[in-house]
Every structure is written in C-alpha cells, then in structure tokens.
Image (tube, rainbow, N blue to C red; front, side):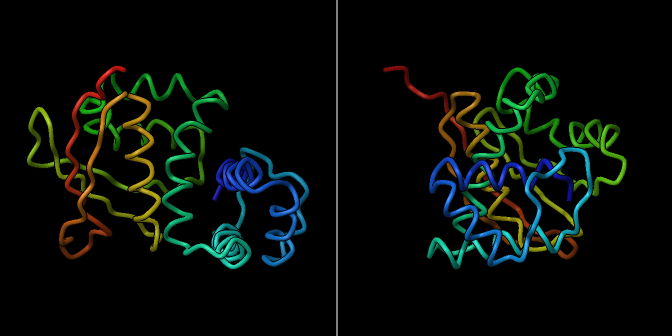
Length: 184
C-alpha cells in the first residue's frame, strides 16, 4: 500500500490516542519508519500489522478500527490535497457513489502500483442503492463501511448501511440508504 494509507492510520491514532500510543503501536508492529512517504509503496503486511498492533494496544476490535479509519480517510485525504478529486466524483452523495469506480481508476493514474478495488451500484433509487465491492485484499469491508459514513458526512446526508449477501467473487454488498441531514 502507498505511504498515504499508513500516514492516515498514523493521523487517526495520533489524533484520538496521542503520540505515545502511536509509538507503542509502531513498536508492536515492528515498524521502524519515522515518516511514511506519501507516494512510496510499502508492503501490505505493514499496514495489516499496524492495524493488528493498534487493535492490541488500544483494546479495540480490528473491525471497529478499520471502520473508524474509513471514516477518517475521507476527511484526511481531502485535507491532504485530494479534495479536488472528491469533487470530480460528483456534486451529491448518490452521484459520488455511482462514480466511485471511475474515481479509483483516475487515482490509479497517479499511483502506478495501486491495486484499486472495484465498485458498482445496483438497484439505485433517489434514496438508496446496493454498493458492490470487489478487491484482491481481504478484510477491508469494515473500512468501506466507514468510508461510506465519511462520504455521508462530507455530503451532509444521513446514511444507513446494511450488509447483504455477496455473490461469488465479491468481497461485500452493502445496502445504503441516504437522506439529507436536517439543518439545526
């Protein structure tokens, strides 16, 4: 995975648990890197190890951490200069979801070793859709749930996510309903 992913994991931990927690997680994971380089590739096992170490250090299930990471990722990447790419995805939550696969294809142009997942939507209505997800990497469905929640926050819609049975070859199918967030 690219350094940007590990930077986001680091940012999530430091923001919510502090510098000491991050250093303990790195030690437990056997990571001796002081700073991850955004565009440099790192072994997937390093990212998996950081999540496992965070789970052990923080006493939280890895799935919960991945979900929190997915939500954090949306805001983190927007703040790190990728906000314009988000805007290319669409002007509404529904439009963004429909363009999710295309957006990852565009991102892959700037990250030549990227192995992006595939996304497609079915049963699309004005307030719901089924999001299909396929990836060579296993175990990231909780992150996808967090990403969808983060996108909901970004587009100011309330989202409800219900996992569905996935077909052979799919990692996950999520039934997503969305409604505008009432303004206070």
